[in-house]
Length: 105
Length: 248
Image (cartoon, rainbow over all chains, first blue to last red; front, top):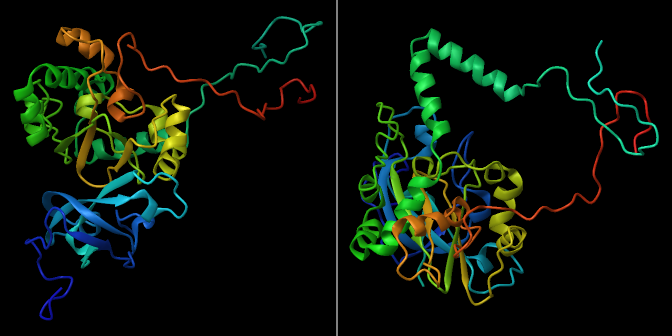
């Protein structure tokens, strides 16, 4: 997010592309979100850019609002759960742009 | 008052529960009826609209999904189109995500993607938040898919949960869980099994069952139905019987 922006600034240009490393923000969500607790703070990789749409936090309350780029992010199961024994296993799930922060490798 | 069962218990040593006199209805069913009646009263839709939609929703099964996989297994160009744009490819087998009932009730969730398995990558699908499911292709989801048991446990212990379905994969195979929490809808595109060379699309579709397209089973020749191992309850709870016998 740039200096001259807030969360309300329209964000139809997605910030990420396939392969980028991203971390899921742990933001407070009032009443509704589709960002699960188990991914908060975890770093993963952009697996796909899917579509642009309203964010769930707006749509659930019938607010028109910013369209955001959505992404499928892939995580290692070992990064999601402590002591997960199988090194190859992964999980992927989907987020709108503002839930993700870039991470430098 | 008539009794629900008429035989005597002399010497048979086992317990019987009386059949309920009245069919029970759950709170959610009451809620649905109330909301539906209000909606009809307020003109959001008509009772006829609701009936048509219900009939359609209850009539579809996984046949379209099976056909989709069988077609992609036999037609590499179609498979490429399916992987490129799932929603568009569905139209080729008669499923239009934008108008799944054909009667003008588009689904909001129209971004369909297949998850392609390989010999070293196996996908399995869940919706931890609710129970999102690719209904236009697979019909209604099975009860277990909507249970908190499945939704909470699959993401944390996928191999244990899959083992309960009878599916055990070696550790080298990557298990990739897809938690469908937004507007994408997913289906597993399984690896075509050995022993199906020269099969027709119809023969192939018969072994692609619903469980294979969710990812809790692998297709193989001869397996044309989803049958789950039954695990006996370890400490089953019996309701107290109506006639005052001591509970076991």
